[in-house]
Every structure is written in C-alpha cells, then in structure tokens.
Length: 321
Length: 163
Image (cartoon, rainbow over all chains, first blue to last red; front, side, top):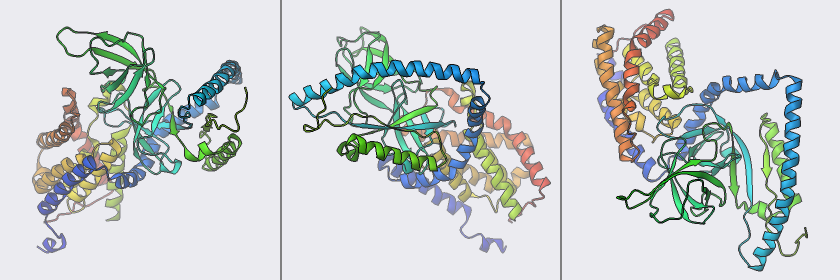
C-alpha cells in the first residue's frame, strides 16, 4: 500500500491532465503558431538521431567521391570547365541586358530590382509524415534561416521553410496538399494560384475560368504576390488543360520544374537583404568571404555562400557596360 | 535501476530512428508505429517507470520529427499507454495473440485520433492505406515483444510490481 503514497497523483488524473494539455497545445500550435520555441528545442534533441540516420547515405556519397578514379574526375572536371565557359558566355550577355534593364527602370523611375542572397543546404534523408511533403534541411537559425523562407534548386522553386530549429529546419514542398503558391504564366502574364495536391509531381491551377489563355507547355513562374517568394522563378510546366462543360472552372494540371524528389542540395533564398543592398559590391564580397571562413571553421566543407551580384543600381555610380 | 533506464532509453531511441529511417516509396505507408510498440512493451514490463508522462513526451518528440501539430501524436500515445497501464497485469499473462488483439484496437484508436485532428485541419488523407501502420504494427507485436523480453532478461531487469 505504500506505493500509493509514493506514486503521487493517480495515472487517471495525469492522463486527463495530459490529454487536456495535448488539446491545448494543438489549439495553440494551430491558431497562433507560437510554439516554435518548443519545437526548435525539441528538434535539436532529435537532430543527432536524424543525422545518424542520414550518415550511411552521406558515407555512400563520400566513398563514391573518394574511390572514383582519376580518369573519371578528369572527365568530370573537363565537362564542368566546358559548361562553365558556356555559362560565362551567356552571363556576359545577361550582364549587358541587366544593366540595360536597370537603366530603363531608372528612366521609368520604377522600383529597383531586389537583391537575393543564396546559401546551399543539404537535405537530411529521413522520412516524415508520408501524407505530407516535408523535407529536413541541415541549416537552421544559426545560419539565419527564417520561417517562410523560400527554397529553390537549380531548376526552380521547391518550397518554403515551415519550422526552424537551431541547426536544422523543415521545409514544405510546393506540392504539399496545404501549400498554395501565387504564380504567373510566363507567356501571357496571367496570374493564378498553384495548389499542391499531395502528389510529388502535380500542381493544380484552380479557379481559372474556361476562357483563360493557357496551353499545355506553358511555363509558370512565381509572381511574387504573396510576399514569400521572389518573383520570376520558374515553378512548373502545364501538362494538362481541360475545360469540362459542366464545371465552372477549367481543370489545369502542372508538373513542378524543380526536382522535388531527387535533389540532394537546395538553395535557401534571402531577398531584400538590407545590409547587402546598401553595401557596394566589393564590401559585400569581403562580407561573403568572412562568412565562408566562419562556415569552414564549422568543419562543414560543403557550405558555399553565393551572393548574386545584382546590386541595386545607384544613380551616381552607374557603370557603363 | 540505472540499467533499466539505459536499456529502456536505447530501445526507445532505436524506435525513434526506425520511425524516420527512409523506406522505399512503396513501403512508406506500411511503416509500423515503432515508438508506440516499444512504449507499450515497457509500460507493461515496468509500469512504474514508463507511464503516461513518458508517453506524452515521446508523443511530442514524434510530433516534432513528423512535423505534425504539437500534441497530435502525444494525445493518442497518452491514451494508449494509459489503457496499457491500467491493464498491465492482465496483459502480462495473456497470450501473444490476445495481446496483439488488444494492441490492434488501441493502435486503431490512436490512428483514428490522429486522423480526426488531420480532418479538422482539412488535410485528411483520402487513402485507406492510412490504417496500414495499425495492421503492420499488430503483426510485428509478437516479435517486438519477444525481442524486448529477451533484452530485458539478458540485462536482468526485474519487473517492478507496483501493486
């Protein structure tokens, strides 16, 4: 009988308290999103486990790199050199066009283009809820990742950050059933919303009338309207346009351009970085290398910081192409 | 006491890792509910150590690792462990089949609670595969039980009779 006094409140009582606490937590989490602190603390508890799970896959890629032959590396290097050259040539043209664009914008006194900063992050290969499209990234608030931050890959938009932990964060892909992305059709400028479907390769454009000018093969780009995503990033290709007679809206499906289920690395995007906009290019470069140093001291050689040199055009220091 | 804690913790950590280990696409929906299974075992074996509090905390960790609402897994886990806690003496002497039947219904209750919350958020999955984890977990219960019992015997954790 003595156990009765040691054990404190009965388990029924505790169960009721905990059930009520769970319901309260769910309500708070859903309505006010104010539990990010708790979530981020608990996520740092879980990070070692997630890292351990990811380790064999990391090891596989690492051994793949280590035991590749010199010939293969040389071939790869040559290929990259060639591609680099090609890209440089194209960039030259782009630079000129960009400067021209800036000048035209000044003539029109339009708002200057925004700057964007990018950071490469790796996907930690763990499974989450099979009915939602979430991925885990190895960058967190220590790298200034914030909630709602857009992520992209080399091809197009992937999704946005939903939870931030100290050294990891989880992101929702654009195909998640609860995700909506404001888009624009590249060809016509028609605005629409791309709804996630829960399938990794499908987005739906809902609520577009039958007479909307849209064709199979059209490219969707972000419109920048939600304020979350920067404008003009490619999102998806239209794959199906149907106009069923009985329905009020057209039935339009699209496939994301980004490799949502194949990418291993993603890019985190910071837009409108105030300190970067104010700085001159050389200053932002030194800042950049400083970041790279602090990152390499973290023993993570995969971190690369990229700053797009799209600085805000200032009227005084306008360089001539 | 220390040994109990260590073995229990290790098994629960392994369960958490199994819960997020990447599976091939066809198997994702069949993933057993490892954390619940392991917690059920320990709640039966050492009810004085693993109770509703531990279940609640484990549930919150599950919520964080799955990105679900805080409390969504916790509420079901608390109820499951509560029932196990009440009936642990009867369940201990029951056959594996009888245990599996009880656990099937408890896991079903947990899954329904999770579904209910998902439904309120408007993201209820429309596939019947949603209940697959309940079935696979039930099938895996006997093995979980035997493995954990052998572990417990090997490391000589005495069952702690609370009553």
